[in-house]
Image (cartoon, rainbow, N blue to C red):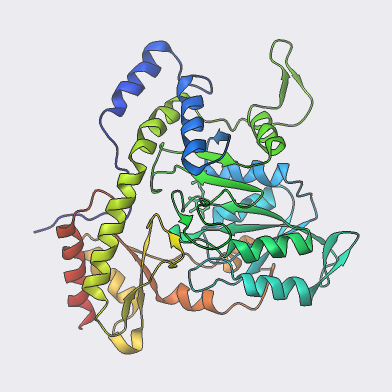
Length: 390
Ligand SMILES: *Cc1c(COP(=O)(O)O)cnc(C)c1O
């Protein structure tokens, strides 16, 4: 018997065809049309902000965000190394250099090390944070809320204030996660820092095929992102452009998927939570295996599940287990290769990395698609148990 179990695939309601039909019949298939405004408004109200601006992708949103935050060529930007490379590339797009930081127990940027770095390796001059090693200005931090976890934003916002840093939240993996305690109780991922960015790529919790959304409580930022995403057009009739803009606006076709998907988001989170609990229940008693927890002071969206494999105890390596599962048509993958070890970034500064290295070799992401039922999860767990017992 072979049945393919996918890691994280789209879950699309066939009723979306109605929306697509409308786009096609009316000809509104491009960067104008009613679904764009509707999707932006629905996203804004879901995460609890006034306004949201859509983009072609999460990456495009991050690029525009760094731009409007004023990150200048020659600046430096602090980023995590344990993340998808798309969180880092936009730093280079704006001509800045990344500095790589370690992660905490929930895969997110280590706020304590961030603070120590600012205090011990940098100095403040004219309200600017200067990196002692390079003499360059550090202007921002990209905080990635990895796998549906949330970074320690209360600490990070304190650091940002003290050291004059802008905070860009890459919330592409954490749409729907929010704090249930602490200073930011009730605040959704992406709404605490200066700007937040979401993604609707096919593997994210909701999808528009490809797409992104930018939120901020600062109206100036929002207006600027929108302006830049529409080629910085100052006069639509006479084609006056007073800045170098981009063609980054979401298509009505994409937004037509978005308005349907966002209506299902809470249901998807329920399914993800249910399946996550099943993995925990089935695998938690096994020595050397653990499905890592999400932080207890958040309501997570449970986007990705992380199986930690301690080879010395289980007797099988992460990669061997992964190969065995893939051979059984169970799609799974190792956590990302650390970004500071990727070719374009090998010469960059990396600060006191430790946990990131451990997770890099020990974590396997196991199937979390919202189309999976409990039997599917049991099937995956049975195989994991079989192969981890030698
Ligand atoms: C998916 C993702 C992105 C990029 O989003 P796209 O919409 O694919 O451009 C950026 N950062 C992280 C952490 C992601 O997981």
